Length: 348
Image (cartoon, rainbow, N blue to C red; front, side, top):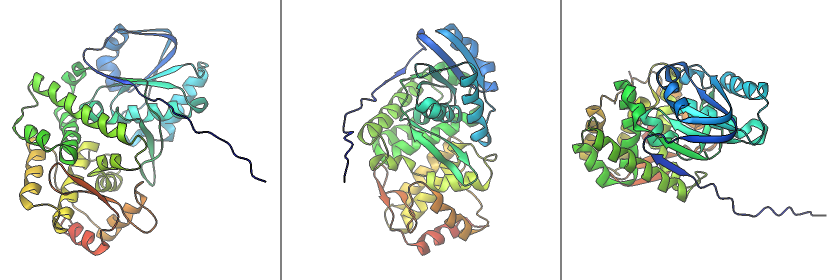
């Protein structure tokens, strides 16, 4: 006997990304703001001046990638149970990429899914992490290996929050902008080479361009089964670096910057990039004090860690590699010997 369950239907997960001064937000339901102490100290008062809800609660999680774990998820969900949140309730992610990823994941699993809104406060989260519905947490095996695709109801990007961003955090966000330019937009890359992102109007233009690029990619491939995987350029290497350094040496964008340099070297070794392009990308990263070097202690161990990457399989490692600035390929056929030769160039 065969019993079919027909579940074919269109689900509209569309939403708006607002890049402007935070509007007045009113919600006729229970709302919890998830944030960390640093963001709360700097900006929670500003957010509360723009927000009304029938009931409002603040949930604070520790600050930093090292706390992007099950313990922090439990803090969020337990508070929701304490205050009897239901499926009509709402989470607001108010912070950087770590807060956004964890809030979205908690929203995706609480009572099998409730709504959430992203209000990102770092450059990295504004141009990348808050857009596209990737949520998750880390575990001892690696970064973001437990998670879900859960799209926000809206994203509010207020450049005001960047006025208190430390230079190092700003630079980490620039790395993700460079990533999008290298993979999808050669003219945008040229613009970045000449641009001064310390100029407010220029930064606003760059924010808009980066978000448009990310939104276009997500609209083509929401669940990362094709073109969206290209946005992981640099991340295959970066996640190994972050895990090796226990998430307390590099900011995510810094690790991505190093990862892009490694990916470029591999692409150069395969004959897919010219050395002049490799140098241009490194120069743009260095312009914003993004690290471009890393000392690998054990090349074999570094390579084996690639197999924990979500894009890889039991028998092949998937790499996102540029074929020149503005073009990219996704390959699972790069031979191990070539990869290790490139990694050897970073070895101590």
